[in-house]
Amino acid sequence: MISAELCVRCKGYKRLCGLPKCPILEKARAAIEATARIAGLKIIGSTPPTAVVGERNYPSVPVIVGIPPGVSGGDAKIYDDPQGWWGKLGLTDILRLRGYQVSSIMRVNVSEPFTLYEKEVGIAAISARPVDTEVVLERLPRPITRLDPFVGATGPAAPAKEVRVVGNASLPRKLEEIIWDDVSAEEAVFELIRGGVDTYSIIRAMSLGFLGRVRRRKLVPTRWAITAVDRAAVKYFLGGLRDLPSVDKVSVHVLEYLMNRFYVILYPGKYHVEWLEVWRPKTGLTERASSSVIVYSRDYGTGRTSTIDGGFDAARHGLVKALYERGRRASAIIVRVIEPGYVIGVGNWHIRETVYRAVRSEGLTFDKLSDALAWVASVENMDVVSALKKLMTMSTRSLDIFAGNGSALKK
Image (cartoon, rainbow, N blue to C red):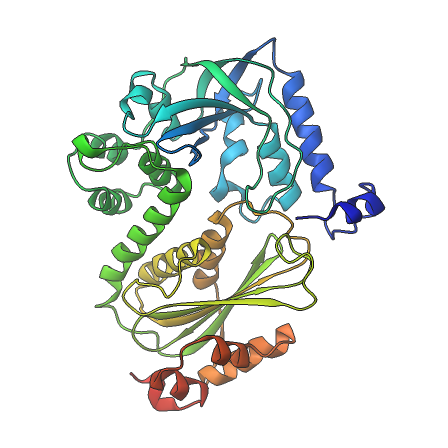
């Protein structure tokens, strides 16, 4: 997170953290504006929709419905719209939008998702468009101005005495059908992907207990639901990739967003993914680091990974979806470089979306994989090849690749 010493020296206007605007001040202003729009303890507005299931005190978990006070109808959509945000909004813009939403907190047992069905809160949460909602709070919400890289961006919050849905939800047809089907959660995710339902609606449906065997349905903490949907999506798209022709050349696809730069290196062969994160000093998680911190993981070609990493799961989802749409399979190395100024995480959505768009973009071509890796290393002023060699368990195939052996690329 941003150090207190840095904030004291900056005072919100010297931009010492590297951002164009002070994220703490922007978030605080949004929270104060939101609180000022509340009439007594009542919030009137439309949920974008925003619904988060927490983990604390499991199995009696917090269910949070977010509402921007005084914002109704289609205007509320922008307050929680990852696909619409991508490439258009910066980090402070997103912090401000999230900071303006008031989080009304209900406490629900995970085994009782139908409690939310009956109140129509669950249905509103999986709507394809904003839904008018009224909330009566138990007390005035408290603005949260702390920037915690582990918690992410949140607005003012307070326990809810009552949450009442007064508008009509609009569900994607396939989602409306699947919530009445008695199938496994994984089968439901597959069917929703086939039906063109967006990832974020699927995540909310999983989290609010709309998917899975009817008698075994439970609320799923949102963080767990994101991982489950990403992994199910990887499995789904991998099933379609295996019979597709391989890419026939080595290419590097580069894209940057929110001070995160991605290099997606594709090369001929069966599906196999190496993941390298390079955290520069002075990010939200490397405040005291004197040099880059490097994290490595791999997908062995079956969807099984060497480590549990939500960012890697999101990246693999974006990768295999884009390859599937291109009609090609490939092996890949994904390098994520996190620059100073990325002081707070905003969720893995930007990883998923950026990798997807990178693979869909025009790439630079190279004769050998080793040439592509050398180019990335030269651009970043770091030895990516050495980092990968040090961090990975070197298989014969990997040694062939780094030696530039052309035969490895033909497998």
